[in-house]
Image (cartoon, rainbow, N blue to C red; front, side, top):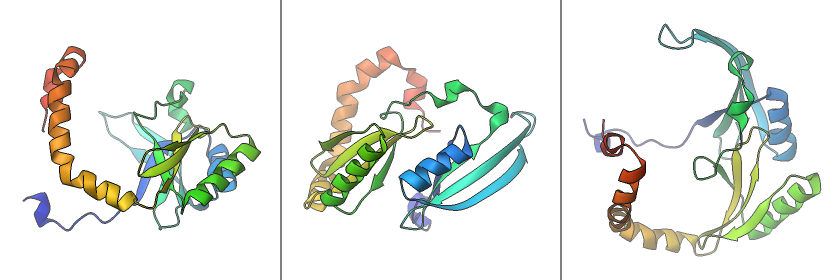
Length: 188
């Protein structure tokens, strides 16, 4: 069965991350970022012999304006400070969209007022963005589309496969020096 024969995936229901403390995370996402705490489920699952056994946690959800969620696991039995070291934003980040450049400036002013360290705005041609870390070391981006962002993205869509092929060819040797060939070529 090909992917094109399946019903298209419509949206992201939630993206989930580990948190250091559910209340600290609630404070940041609800009081600072303005997202509604939508649910907090205490649960325990048995991940079996090959896993870590029973995992007891609180799973909290914050609702986005579009009905999707950011979710977090507070699981103190397997917590360690190493899990909360700041991530490189190229490894992982969450980009939240605001309505326009004026709103982006207002968000930056609010974060500055609250003492949240913030970088930017940075002009990426199709969006402008500001960046910060949440209390769990997760990089966050607040982004606003520029007036011609649809055109910029469409122009790139027309050449996306060619750009990808050129990049793969240009970087292959460097990747082979640094990474495992089998992992690079794996297609399950």
